[in-house]
Image (cartoon, rainbow, N blue to C red; front, side, top):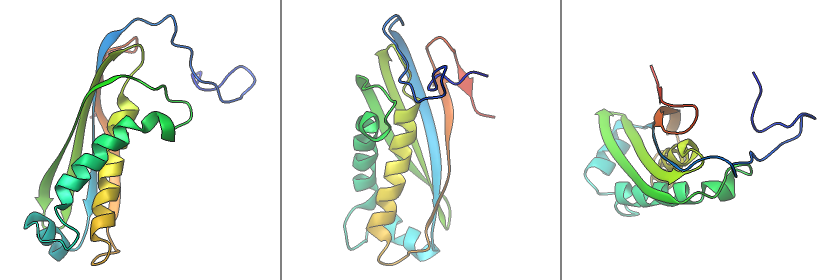
Length: 156
């Protein structure tokens, strides 16, 4: 399999998208952050000393998606149409983070969806680390993507 970000000499290469067509592209990603039950209870009750953890994390995730091209050297700066970050309390010690991102452009938006989840999780950690440094961010993955030459992808 040929990697698109490696040239014929094995060097890093930014993919040339000049000839690609604009198509609607979407991506969804998810991740988990596990923590002590009392930490999650503090988030659920919106009683963290630093403020509203989930609102701050949603904003951070959106901002992270918008800055993906600045953080990952071979990502294109794409015109993002939508980013949404949502949270779900799934167990007494686990918070699920899910993102959705879309654009109409020449290249995909998967990395922006993954960045949104990652940065939202880091924001939760940052806002709660004073009471729980044992939090674990895990299982960040692409759930699905649409559009582009490679077509659709859905995680199993």
